[in-house]
Amino acid sequence: MTNNPANTTLGDFCPKNTFAIHPDNPLKESEFNWLFKNRDANGFKEAFVRVNARKFLVHIPTFTACLTNLRGA
Image (tube, rainbow, N blue to C red; front, side, top):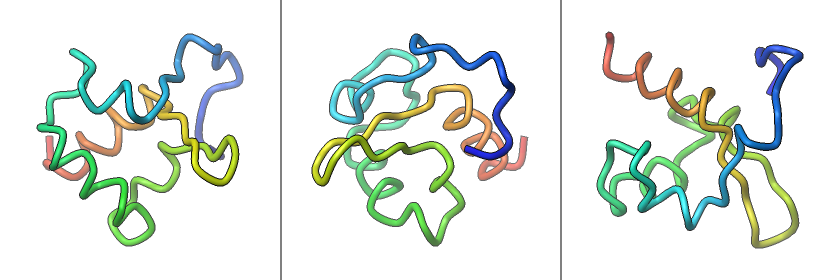
C-alpha cells in the first residue's frame, strides 16, 4: 500500500470474506475471488493486506481504484 494517503483509517479495511458479499463490492463473489487469486498478475496486490497465513483485509479505497483502472474508467 505504497500509494495510499497518510490518513488511512481502520474503517477503510474490511475482511476479505466479508467484502466478497459487501454492498460496496460491485463484483459477484466468484469474480472477486478470481481477482484475489490472481492479484499479483492483475494489479490488485496493493488492495489486499495479509493479517496472517490465512486472513487478508481489503483496503476498500485501493480496491475501488484498482477496479476503476481495470475497467478503464
